Image (cartoon, rainbow, N blue to C red; front, side, top):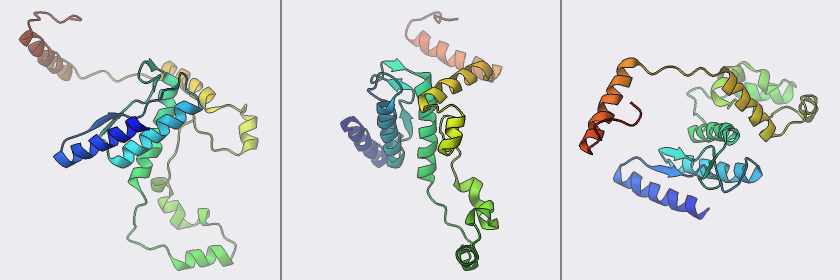
Length: 196
């Protein structure tokens, strides 16, 4: 927690100076993607998001930066989504919630979730997690195999690795990046890049 406190403190200095900030604040000392990893990463990512840190590093990192875990990265992706939703906050609307909606719901036995107002704003105001997060009731959860978040993360990693097709970098951008890197390398006496 002390490292997180220091990260948040220097973030305040960066904001005061008007410069972007970065922090390794979404990582964990845990050795595997367990409850400790979720706790430490969750606290760090939420605190970093609320503090306004521009770039939060650490998702997927274990054993204080010395280990990477694809399962933790998938879990941390959900934490980042929740943190982002939290920072967005509750959006004030120009149209007030109608009194009759509450009256109907309370006195006529209607359900708020089925009202037109709920349907109108629900998709914008609700965070939809990926398959790692279980929001089913326990009966459905048991029918699906009673899996843990770690088990679901492992399955999601397998799915992503089997199906993901990265988009190739535009050739013009690739050439420009290579030109910039080569020019920088030449400034330091390198006549050829190691991987070219």
